[in-house]
Image (cartoon, rainbow, N blue to C red; front, side, top):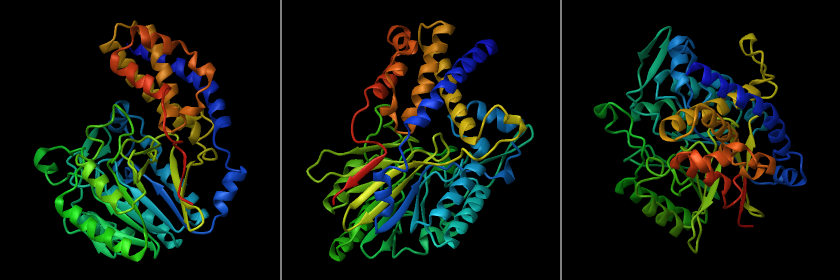
Length: 446
């Protein structure tokens, strides 16, 4: 089995060399006239990130226990997450926007040390004059899976309560809040007098310690709905634009990512914000860069930001102005100048390593599923897994439109229709036939 796994990895690494060139050439042109016009706009400048899944180096020696943990990982580059977050910090401080929105899953599994390290990083951003607003994700609070990695062993470490979360991130939204929800960690801030932000806690963490595992799904209580309505009514009276932020999704972004991803009572949530004139909800959780919209008369757009911990490590930039309304563009974090140590000398940069790592994890997971659930041979499973790995690089970055005709001729696509399992074939077809708004840019109103 180890030999066949090696063959799979070699196959997709060969493809990576070809595919990386095409991907970099097809990326959004940051020097285009449209981009320059976007950056030149007067108005509120906000950045948004999601799903950092930060793991503190103080509880991780990256030894054998951590490497075993990563072998069954889902593509998050926790090996280099401290350098990824440092690179983002440097990039945002250099740009000096007005604010940073962080839409949940700040930590790997709610480790107190990870929260403390991340709060220190956010403080550096705050010290540069950039307001930071955070909301928790399903990994962040009362997480029984909080673990450190030392040598051969995983060790239990402290997690945080809701009260501790609020205290740790006091300077990252809570102290700026003009209204807080007594039923959750939700709060409201005024980015300026005409733009308010509702950071809405959608998580189920009350029973986590009793259950022995973190509940992945999200829901809003009647009390939180009542608080939301009061704030939204105040915004309408003040003539303010409101942007809402939730970790869990209010709209469906993927046919195979619904249960555990969407807010259980998302219809009630959407009804409240739509009737209050909210046009944009920011979210994360699914790790995919995706923009979707409901089909109501007064539409609500929802932007799911690619996980900062997952290639291509995108973040969002939002400009709010009287002239253009709300305009959004994603941007790929620049990791091309960050060099790696001798252990990873085969890669030109952290960017190249992270891409290869994500593609390998995607291919390996699909390879094992195909062997278990389809009639494919090991060779056929390897070819199909290679195709999925290639597709996932585009899909998670919201770049399905960059799929070339040459890529569509990959043998793995044909084999999937003949010997692939139903679930994987459906997943592949959804990517190949993706429709809807551009996933990387959006303008709402003018």
